[in-house]
Image (cartoon, rainbow, N blue to C red; front, top):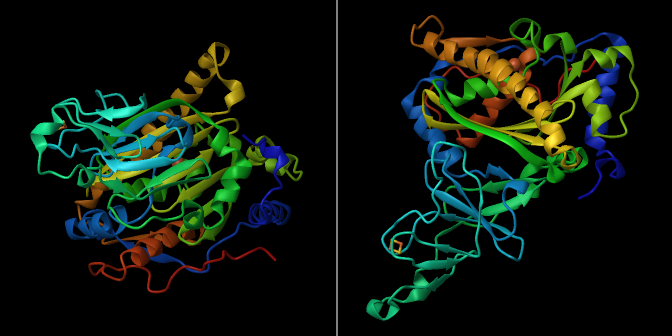
Length: 412
Ligand code: FES
Ligand SMILES: [Fe+2]
């Protein structure tokens, strides 16, 4: 795997770093060009939720796993999209996805195996636990027990049902609905170069949590698209390390990449030669539209999938990724303590608890819309992306009348 420091920083990321420097030099926060509103029905309306399920989670490439979670000759169950899926990587190294459903009588081929987050199982084939029909890792039916008793059925029609799947920047994407292949690199619209430079493909999993909370998935997405709340909500935990709402942000299609400035950037700033140096100046935060975040802490990464099992529920799948040269016994205590702080204290007790409290308050009817200021333009941009993805089929709601500016107002 490439050492990130040997790859030139992508020009789009370098521009973001330059804007961060300009913001701190001028003491001017980048702002959107307009305020906006978002209808609260987007978080509560079952019809809107069903449209999202059909047009967004049913059709778009969605991040299912980090590349390191799927070694060669292994299979990983993935069911956060509401249908049972199994990811495989055969000896040819290619990631594939199939419906995790046997073509004989429908049994799941690979079980998640309990309440803990699923892990890949090493295997050379998928053997159904019901009657042992066996499939190659590329989905072809290899063997049926007592095959002669199935005369009249063409085995060539009984391969696993394949789903579109591709990999880029260290992420494995899948579409829930069978159909044409797609390019994950093209889908990322340049963000894959950022992820490569940051070294994402070479990271490895330390811990993973997979839990459901009582909040619409977009409330947790919103929480990671603005730095406006850090000073208040995270006052006791992470605000001591951050500047107050100095965030620079770029859009790559519906995706976003932000640098959330840390105080260290205001103390000593130099062009960062590598990911570690950049993460001292700011916390890079990418939204891979629609529901995946990468949050680059000083020496590790949070990969977070925010799935939507119901209109008022988010399935939060947080994978902590660490550098491959910092694994093993000597590091475990450090990473465990780090994980507790970020997952249990910052995310669960602060960000997620806030989303749950907001969802509870939505039923009161106090707000028909939320009011977003110019430091929250990333949130507006995200909701415009949802509008676009749903192709104008949204139930009526008071979305911002005009789209937020694609480029934030820059300090002169
Ligand atoms: S259901 Fe899979 S072999 Fe029978
Ligand atoms: Fe937060």
